[in-house]
Image (cartoon, rainbow, N blue to C red; front, side):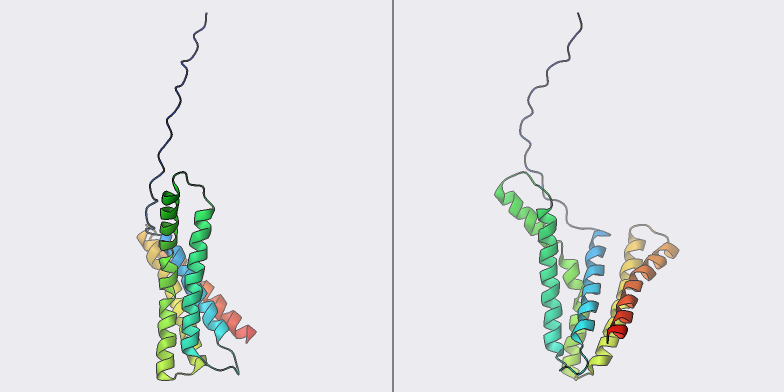
Length: 180
């Protein structure tokens, strides 16, 4: 007679999973790069030849677009996963997913501040766009290099990652020059 394996007892229901930890390390790089690229694209698009220069309006649109993109991105991340638990727990998870998008919004602030200063100082739109795109390209290099170093890359590799990120900014500059 062969022995049969013991019958497994039914498992009690598992409690809802705890909240995921907030973003750390390289995770916020995504938001930083995405927000900087978003701000660059908006800066280039809002500067129209022959159009009225409205730096305060442009600054508000950069900020509103970044906030909307952050909300949409956090919401889509939340909705793309299934979480067991109560409705309250799922709402807390959604709130955490939305909060995790702050780096994207924060990354647009240098462009927003540049536009606000440009409006107060009555700077020329083409110069502001050139400075803003150059600044954002430098920030993309910094994002890539800094985070790469932080997560353990050696200096040479980190610089190459920074150059790869800055290439995105250069592509926006080239596209802006070709389209206009």
